Structures are given as C-alpha cells and as structure tokens.
Amino acid sequence: MKIAIIYDSITGNTELLAKEIAKEVKPDELLVVKKVDEEIPEAELYFIGSWTDRGSCSDKIKKLFEKLHHKRIAYFETAGFKGEDYFERLFMRVKELIPNDNKIIGHYFCQGKMPVAIKERYLKMIKANPEDAKLKVSLDNFEEALNHPDEDDLKKLREWVKNCLNNI
Image 1 (tube, rainbow, N blue to C red):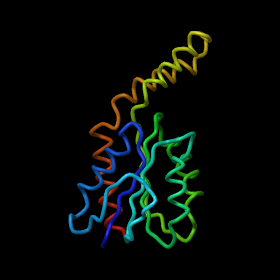
Image 2: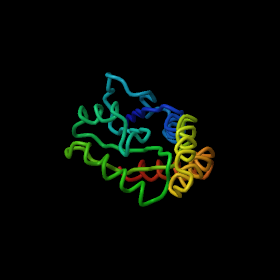
Image 3: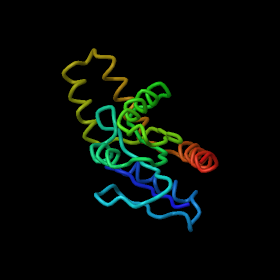
Image 4: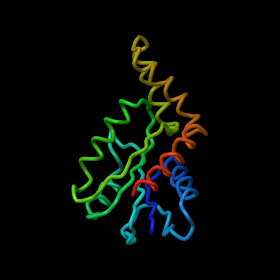
C-alpha cells in the first residue's frame, strides 16, 4: 500500500503530527510527507492535516479536498482551543468539504500552541474590557496551549494511526 501524508502548518503543530504519523508507517509504504502544494501523489491512503482556520481547515487543504475523489482519507488537525465537543464540531465542518465519493477512515484533533500575536490581541482586548470573563478564559487557554501538542497528544495520535492502518 502507498501512503501519502500531506499537511498545511503555520506554527509547526500540524507538521509535528505529520512527522509523527510518518514514524508509524512502514518505510516501504510511505510515499511522501509534504506540505500541501499543487502536486498530488497517487496513493491508496492519504493522511491529510491542517491547522484550524476560522473554525475549519486551511484554504490550501480545502482546495486539496476538491481534487480528491474515490480516495481513503484519514484527517488530522490542530486547534488553539481544546475539547471533544469542539473537536467534533470542527470535524463536522471539515467533513462537509470532503467529496462524498471519498471514504473517511478516521479523524484526530489535538490542541496546539498559537502565535504570540493571538496573546497580544487578547491582552489588548482585556485592557479595553477588563470585566470580560470570556477573554480571561481565552488568555488562560492560550497559556495552556503553549504545552501542546504534548507527549500525551502524540501517544493518542500514534494509537489513532495504528487504528486507521488496521481498519483499511
């Protein structure tokens, strides 16, 4: 079987997951691990990953999905916020972008650190609205996200990859 791992990453979180996925794939089955571009290798299984962009995947990954038909896809994503309900809502949005003739064999989400500019924006907003409890929660979440993806996230990712590979 030939497997392609294609991802889009800004802060390095999704790239880290892509490289970790590659460690779980047999070397003779791994076709490519690369950032998304115009060239789509022919593979039997695609691990496709993105960062969270306004509650969905990146525009580059959206365009990739438009080109994939009759493929098996395992989707992974990193997000600044966390929570199983949140991750499921994100996946449902992404799932709508994947043409129905593809088979989704699984999805994995985990929290990832955010750019420092996000923290700076939160601090400015808190200064202007010191009583806004939601902003304080967002700032706390920013600090929590700095530690992710952590070893527990990567362990869960490896288990997910093994499960995907065993169920195709």
